[in-house]
Image 1 (cartoon, one colour):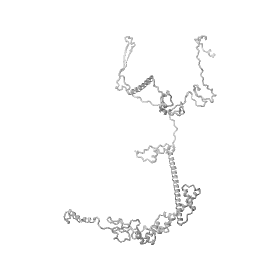
Image 2: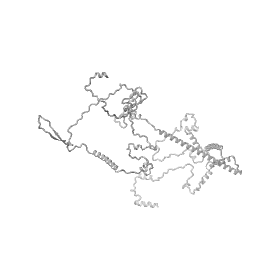
Image 3: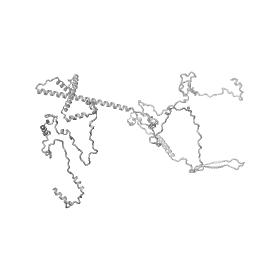
Image 4: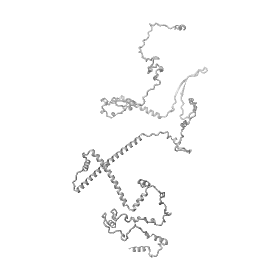
Length: 573
């Protein structure tokens, strides 16, 4: 420092040294020391986290501290409250759901959002007497509120009026201004003096067209676009080309060009393959619920039917037992033997008492009754089967020759599946019987059925040349006389008595059908004769038409038409 002072030149003006005793410095105000954050030196910042702006000392972040650092609050996101409200509770711990109604409102605004707001003030218990007394505002508050209301209304009205008024209206009164002008000296002449100039604005005509034509200059070229860095071109593979293939736009309504579009291309353009079909799980739940309900219903119906069957079997067994006891008692009374209580009668009596609610039965007796019911059911089934077999054998024995032939023909004409099921099918031994002989030697029908005027719809009798007609009206030949199964015992005397028997008490007919007594006894079927008489006079009418006579020229009768009618009337009388 001394070497530097020796090299510098001496100052031209020396400062005046004042006496320190004479200088009175003002007393500095007492200042309190501001504590500053202590920043550890470099190399000793392990575990230290800068959190406040003072920790950075107007500098940057510390790279050796691996924590999130925001020097000068740079990069720090400011937390926004948003529209989400925090959950609030009142003094009693209940959730305040009316906080959303108070959001964005002024603090002194009264919002009635609770049930207690509907209760009159006199009946509310959460208010004091001071809160119930509603004091009227003072005169100053009333005037202040009225003034604010008037200013707000004037502001709204003024804005509406200004919006309706036209803009840029030229001022009709020109602004005038006076200017004092002092000319400068020109060629040494002092004769020019000051003057006052009146300056006014020229009034413009609002309907005057524009004097100048504004022509817009074309915009200059924009800034060059930023360079786009692309990879070197390479040939696309077949898979990439298929992925990049975009189906053409195909309309389902218009085809102006008349192209023939395949269905696969039309469906590909429709975009159905890009849509995923999602089936709601409720369908499966619904079907499962229906299935479970149906299963429960079927189970209930089955249990109900089983219970009804058991009750019916039990009632049937009890009735049979009662009938058996009554028959046994009747036989004993008829024979004159005193009835003795047997084990069966005692068991039946116990079963009947059990039906009426007696408690004398036991578990073993119930099991025995169930076994007896099953055995009785088996015996009933066997009896029914044997009864059906006996009835079938009796019908076969009483069957006539013709019915037996029909039965055999019916068995022969059965389908092969029915024959196999009945055990009647037999293998065919010869090849000649494989063809149906009924198809041969068929009489050929004529081309037309008959003439139009012929009345021969039934050209031959129904049972012509067969024994069926004789068998219908005669007694069966295979039924011997005296057989009780035949009508009237199979004898002529018995048949006559059976016919004369008044079964329903209607009495004997006094007079039969008219003309029935004149007819002879008929042994065969009823035969009808063709009526050749002209009932409607059609033949006579056709004969008269063929002769060509006219009724107006017929004078053979004589007299007028009225006279002929009178004659006919007299003849009728």
